[in-house]
Image (cartoon, rainbow, N blue to C red; front, side):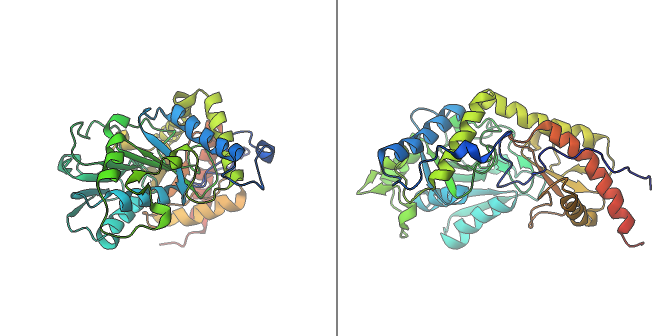
Length: 379
């Protein structure tokens, strides 16, 4: 085994967690000094801040003007659950599961909502389900990007324009880093804690006019908790989409979200964010292409995520000790594969991560593998 020298340079920011993710470059707590604290979130000034998060998000992402966009409880999970419990049951549903979160939505649909007409179209980690098998006369639930598999939907062309059902898309690790096909989607969810590096606990829910029509014309057979209710008296609760949140938000987190959105605008908006994430993927791709002990978990290069970059090793048993060693050295935090995923490494490549830090990390991966091999028991 060749000796690998210990790298001299650590990443400037060694935070490569896939959520909560690295703060934007240059972030300090001073950025939050303008937070409106100790005030009711229903007062005019705090509510204006909440509305500003909605409008800046809408503008950067290009959310169509006739869509509703609101802040909801419990991060992306809460936003997805709200959509599933409020909208499903009117017709059959297909759930696409190709990683742990998609599998979780399938469990909700089949075991919690107990919908009798539900199909789960599954694929193993590293692959996408067969899109040709999806029936768009039914509702369709899917993640745009598999946060725990590193497999993304490359485009929206597979989604029928003349669909009868709704498309419900969990986009938490895709929004702000991948171009979403708004004309093919009906419900889109994400959280603040991913690509813009915001703090946890708050989700975003975007609804197309078709989704709103479903809310107004269909009433689920099951009771809805208060935090899931989007209608009252047969009418949409419009305040949710103007900053009147269902529950009490953290105004400190709101200020942080605004800081991230302003930074996003400063780097060129959506185009700039996409370019930053793709540059991070390219850096890892170039390195993996010349490294014989590592490969992407995503089998098709067109489906490789530019945010949750998931890698498999020729000796998967080395992944955990490598991650532990890198943590100890302060070279990389939180890069072990997700607990339900195959053993490997997961490097967050969202827009707040500098490509220079990715490039500085890669020699540390080589060093950590060599050091771990020295400690591995002989066969």
